[in-house]
Length: 169
Image (cartoon, rainbow, N blue to C red; front, side, top):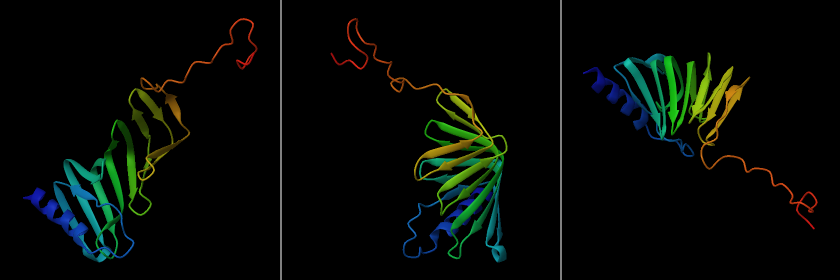
């Protein structure tokens, strides 16, 4: 029953007509429970086990998601807390709090953010994932970068005996 309620709420949020120029991709939310706070234009989603927010190929999961809506009922900003995980392709970001901004098309992760991309693992202070540009910026980053096969840097070209550096005769 609560899954049906959550699905209805998500549909209601996205079903509002879009004003001209608002070509943002739709956002879908799945949750165990939803609380609609109409006067505040806020929706609280609770998960058992997790809430799932999906926008195109990016999936944000957490225990609790608080979404602020615009006048048309679309999610404009959402704050995710508790077991936060953002997945897009092979990239996985985890943190304590993630804030999704629909207009800017970003997710900002704070509270021990960690980015995993293949075997690469980076940790830092704040992680900003620009979904439109498919770009991650991690401040105060520390970790290990392991290139994927085929992405290794080319080895330096060494001159042959009798050839000056740069390869020109």
